[in-house]
Structures are given as structure tokens and as C-alpha cells.
Length: 337
Ligand code: NAD
Ligand code: UDP
Image 1 (cartoon, protein in one colour):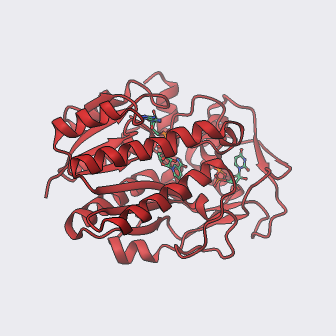
Image 2 (spheres, rainbow, N blue to C red):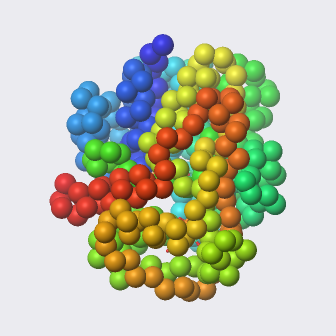
């Protein structure tokens, strides 16, 4: 059944791809974004992809008046909450900003939803809630371990939502713990678009392939992994977006919440990612081995069976498609698109 969905942070990387997937599934979507980490061209790009006007509200999720007006005028059935700050290193330097946006924003949103009687929410969480997990692949039952203020805000967000559902069973929340989102939309009109030198591997590799950065630093090759470099479960952002559609539809059809990992269940090392990107881009990708990055986790790989059982979610795209779509997107951007 078609529903009216509010996407906070819907102009960002994962939110924009989820917008496309929701519209393709027949839903009516309203975006709320303050463009603190998104380009103003995104709504128009979304129109090009979906062939429908993008309903875009510019505003801050911490502003109660903005939210009250949206719920009053838009008849929202459910919310997908992406709006947050997400850089681990920055969160160590400016923890208050992270508590303000990630916890303050969530609290303000929940108040507005409660006041409007809208109690269906999909929440962007992260594998980072597991800290350094005891086991890989890591199941949803693994304990919370905060490694930095960013991770702490995701743990606190999940816990707040747990207490809210315990207090009032009319709430149904889908908590989605993303592993490592990568790749871009097949149209190359939207994708990950970091403003500064990227911290994450895939966008950094993309900039080396473009010739904008000279070489990749591989952060350690002495981990207890097959080639000694860090292993991650990269998930194509279009697969991830589809996971949100399934989560929302499950919440709306059953009124029951869930907590699921969204990953592929398969890990790739840093060197494997570089090799795959080299194949996709046909560019030389110089790299050097450097010291480990402080606080890095050797292996993050999802136990992916709960998402399959609860949501019927399966990933469809592998690492080569992530690299190929990323390369198409960054080449398109570099060409001035
Ligand atoms: P992003 O920065 O591309 O998207 C976030 C969007 O929220 C941006 O468009 C930004 O302008 C907007 N925003 C930020 N603060 C806002 C505010 N106060 N009011 C309104 N809009 C605001 O990030 P993303 O990678 O798309 O991440 C989306 C969500 O997924 C975040 O909650 C993030 O913590 C979570 N997540 C991301 C990853 C990842 O690797 N990208 C992994 C796990 C979890
Ligand atoms: N990594 C790297 N060089 C970089 C960026 C990342 O070797 O310039 C490694 C990092 O140590 C980790 C993997 O790539 O093993 C993924 O890092 P990313 O920051 O993308 O994701 P996260 O560590 O947050 O899961």
C-alpha cells in the first residue's frame, strides 16, 4: 500500500538512494534536510531519476516548529531518520555537536511524531555499535561497545527507541545497523560526495583513481586477517536503500519493530577493494602500507541471516558493482555533471 514517508537527511548519500527506492515502490516521499552535508542539486537529480517532482523541505530536524508544521500539513505515515553527523574522528574532537544533532535531533523528532500520533520509524544505526566485536561475522545479539562519541550516539539512539517501544507498544521501530555502504546509483546522478579529503576507504580510492590524490595509505597489514589488512562488509547503497523499503513496509504491515544488520555477510580486505577498483576504473592505484589507524577494528562482517528471515532481504550487488558504479559516478562528477 502506498504510504506518505518523511525522510530526514533525505538529500544525503544513503537518504537520496532510499528516496529513489521508495518512489519506485510507489510511496509518496517528503524530504527534510538542512543541506549541512548535501548538495543543493540533489533534489533535481532525484527528479531526473524518478521522473516525479521531489518534495523537499529545507530545515533542521532539531527545530520543533518545522517538524510540527510538517506533521500538521503532510499526513505522514512513517519516518526514515537519516539526518545525523557521521564522522568518527570529528566526533572525538567535537562530541557536543554529535550529541546535539544525533541525540537532540532524534529527541525532537520523536516528540513531534508522538504529538502527531505517527509511531512508525526506521532508524539509521551502524555496525559501529558493536565496537570491537568478539565474533565475526557479528550477530545482532552482540553487546554494545562505544568506541567514540559517534558510536555512543547510535547506541543511545537505539536504547531510547527501545525504551519508547517498551513504554508504548503502539510504537514500532526498525533499527537498521548498516555495515559499510559503498557505490552509487546506476544513473551516476547521485552518490557519495565528501566535501573534504575522505576518511573512508572507497571514496578515498575513488579520488586516487581520479588523480586528485596521489596514493592510498593502507592502514596496517599486520592484522589477523587473510592478507593482514582490515576486512569490511561492503554493501551496495542501492541494496541498502531496498532494505529500508522492506523495513518500512514490515513496520506498516505488522506494527512490530525489528533490529537487523544490513550487510552481505561477506568481507573484503583493503587490498581486495583496491584490486576491484583498479579493475573497475582501469587506472593505476598507487598505495603504501602505513601504520594502523588508531581505534580501527580488524574485521567487521555482518551475520546477515536475521535480515533475510525478518525482512526477506538479500543483497544483489557485489564488490565489482560497487566499484563500477562509484567510478561511473565520480567520473561523471569530475566531468562537471
Ligand atoms: P550524509 O551526511 O550523506 O547524510 C545525512 C544528511 O542529513 C545530509 O544530507 C545532511 O545535510 C542532513 N543533516 C545533517 N544534520 C541535519 C539536521 N540537523 N537537520 C536536517 N538535516 C540534517 O550521511 P549518510 O552516509 O547518508 O548517512 C545517513 C545515516 O546513516 C546517518 O544517520 C549515519 O550516521 C548513518 N550511517 C552511515 C554510514 C555510512 O558509512 N555512510 C554507516 C552507518 C550508519
Ligand atoms: N582504510 C585504509 N586507508 C584509508 C581508509 C581506510 O586502509 O585511507 C582501511 C581501514 O583501516 C579499514 C577499511 O579500510 O580497515 C575500511 O575503512 P573505512 O574508514 O572505510 O570504514 P570503517 O573503518 O569505518 O568501517
